[in-house]
Length: 114
Length: 112
View 1: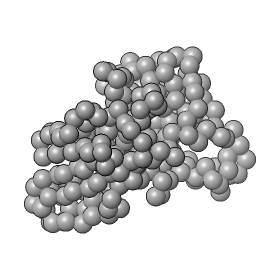
View 2: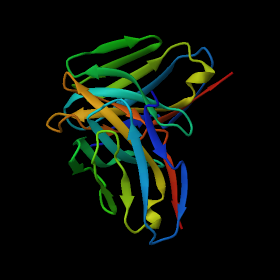
View 3: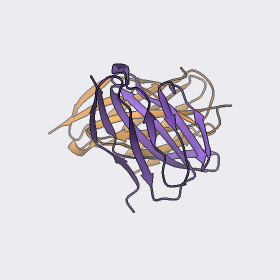
View 4: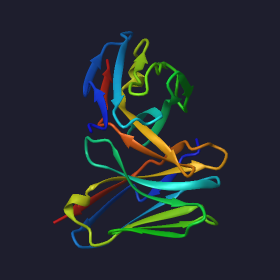
């Protein structure tokens, strides 16, 4: 199993450009989520999904869109990139057992917005 | 933000020594998890402790939880150079569903 696969690994954008970060998982997990990691800030939740067709906002959703048309895929769209969105982005899939959610992370996408 | 805070921010030890890192949080929790992040990689789940537990062990890892002080500690015994990584606590707050909130992390460096 590949686990959680994120593409691309690196991306440079100009302010105002749009792009989609791809995330796919092959573990048949119902839950998927996107985090951003900034120095000194830990990981902050952007958006998450509890199943195909269901998405919800996390702590820092502004400037990002998501959709979940299949169990496997959960793309993150930047509509109009801003320098404040320079960050490392992690996608995670997860399952809940006994009231506990356990996350499996991809290897990340390093995004720079100039 | 209901973020956990890890302490210290950075820790440097010699191989064979024990490493202890702490996590404090603000509100009551259902469970607390520790994750490791190697440089340039995603986070990997290490160990889970539920709110009704006080101590858990997994190999060289020992985690404790003190809900009265709203704090947890992760102890890595007999550390190895391969333990060099960042360590994050993540908490599931009571009433927050299952969603995890991550702390800011402790950078551990184990030197030969």
